[in-house]
Image (cartoon, rainbow over all chains, first blue to last red; front, top):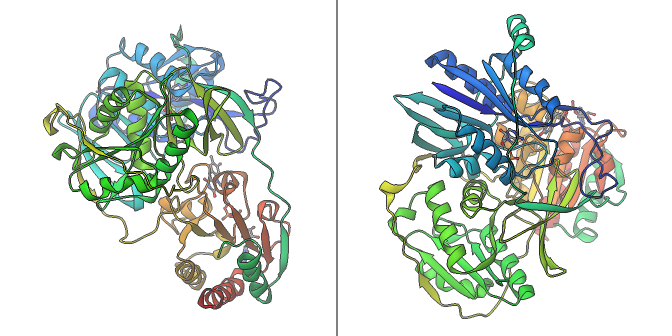
Amino acid sequence: MEIIVCIRRAPTTDARIKPGPDGKTYDPAGVNFDISEYDKFAIEAGIELKEKHGGKATVLSLGPTVSSKELRTAIAMGCDAASLLVSDAQHDAWATACALAAKLKTMPHDLLLFGWNSVDNQAAATGQMVAELLGLPCVSVTVALEVKDGVAHAERLSAHGNRERIAVKLPAVITCQKGLNKPRQPNMKGLMNAKKTVIDESPANAPANGVVTVKLDPPPPRPAGKIVGKGPEAAKALVGLLHNEAKVV
Amino acid sequence: MSKNVLVYVECADLRPTKAGLQALGAGQRLARQLGGEAVALLTGPGLEAEAAKLGAHGANKVQLAAAEVFATYSQDGLARLVTQQAAATQAAAVLASATPMGKDFMARAAAAGKAGLAADCTDIKVEGGKIHAVRPVYAGKALATVEAAGVLWATLRPNVFAVEATAISAPVENVNVSYGPGDLKSVVREIVQGVKGKLDVAEAEIVVSGGRGLKDPAGEGKQNWENLEKLATTLGAAVGASRAVVDAGWRPHGDQVGQTGKTVSPKLYVACGISGAIQHLAGMSGSKVIVAINKDDTAPIFKVADYGIVGMVEDVVPALTAAFAETLKS
Ligand SMILES: Cc1cc2nc3c(=O)[nH]c(=O)nc-3n(C[C@H](O)[C@H](O)[C@H](O)COP(=O)(O)OP(=O)(O)OC[C@H]3O[C@@H](n4cnc5c(N)ncnc54)[C@H](O)[C@@H]3O)c2cc1C
Ligand SMILES: Nc1ncnc2c1ncn2[C@@H]1O[C@H](COP(=O)(O)O)[C@@H](O)[C@H]1O
């Protein structure tokens, strides 16, 4: 089975994000990067499926050349090959999906794995968009996945904690949510592999963004709060404030 | 420029959902600014009566796709319909709710329309002749204002937009499609029900969340979690949790609030025994009013809280439940 895992290099979740001088993008000073959280579940799913069914798991990313670090981490975890579509621009989900789809058309694939949502852009859209562009079925927010006889059996989280069971024919796109698996740590052999791996680099072929950011603002500051009191004796006063002042109950 | 706004109104149990009506309200206000009409689109059999009532919530026109093919959810089936209707109504904007369903099909529909998606928006309006949508990014650490070159496709965050009360007599038009279940790529085969009647944190108007301070529910924390459930029941609230609690297996992942959990925007958020790590704050700082209960008066959660009590969850939570019960009675 040919598996391709699309991963994004994103600011770590503890990063403090401040709009930069252009007022449209954030100030990268002091921001660290990592594989976007949910993409780790996609990497693990790819490795597990490859181990079970045979074949190859390739990681693919669109981003600046430094993204090779995240790609090497995926190799260290157990992926077999890595491709990087080089671009320094800020792409939205549409432009990203177009560039990924253009590359994916040139790569054999049975299963395309994504994170369900990126921790920075948070569009929760790229996987479905790639599926549309390639004419493939897609299951998003997947928490259980099995592949049998050319069919992916997936469970996706929907509202109220319900799970929807969907079976789709391969090739297919699956976007991964926490709960699907436990991403492994790289081992010694993986780390050696990661060092040796030659990353297939090519320029990204991305169109203009579908949605354009015209302004990036910090969230409105919250007014200073007050400590109502100490211990259970303060409960009545707090409820009084919520009722009379904040008027939320 | 076209001036109409197409709104996919999500339904459940044969009725529009609250989030669906909120999206319709936003669509009506946007259409008024554009000088066009809000067109509500509903799918599935059995919605004739509900469709006819949508003029009361901002629809100028209603389109009903009642075909059996829409009885069960399909990402590509719905995307295809919405793309078709976006063209048919000459929509300047296409809106749906940022729910598990809306997030799933709208991305695909936007791509079919060769457009991007403004996901999970908290505001949408016309500025300088352009439709501008505001969306939290980096888990709410920044707000991006976005626009589209052509049609703006957007999903709207639940509980942020007001429902409209209008007295429009909106005609209902039946929409036909040329495809059937056999033409679809993915169809939901079966729905495994979650806990019956459980309120989802992402949709609830009030959320009470527990953190590591409540301790292990299988051990010394048993009473604390029961107390938290009682507080939630009294307020009609959903129970949320920090990631520390979810990772420890004390609560299901669906309850997790934060950057890698759910983003919530209730009118009241009560954080009990939660320190207020940056990833947790990212998911809940959009709440209207925040209350924190923590034994440590230097806990970062107090920096974002509107009201706080410094104390032990063991006795503050039951005292709160009693005080709320009394206030709600009167
Ligand atoms: C990639 C990544 C993603 C993450 N995503 C999320 C996320 O989505 N959501 C999230 O919540 N976290 C997330 N985290 C984890 C986050 O950094 C914190 O570790 C977590 O939020 C801490 O949970 P907590 O506040 O329950 O526990 P703690 O930090 O241990 O805090 C417990 C608090 O309870 C108080 N307390 C203890 N006993 C009592 C008592 N008896 N009465 C009253 N107060 C008491 C303490 O004073 C303390 O403030 C993420 C971390 C990473 C690295
Ligand atoms: N630049 C990128 N390169 C490769 N994959 C990406 C990129 N951006 C997003 N993705 C994938 O798309 C998923 C969803 O991202 P988003 O639509 O931004 O929420 C991510 O979890 C990744 O799997």
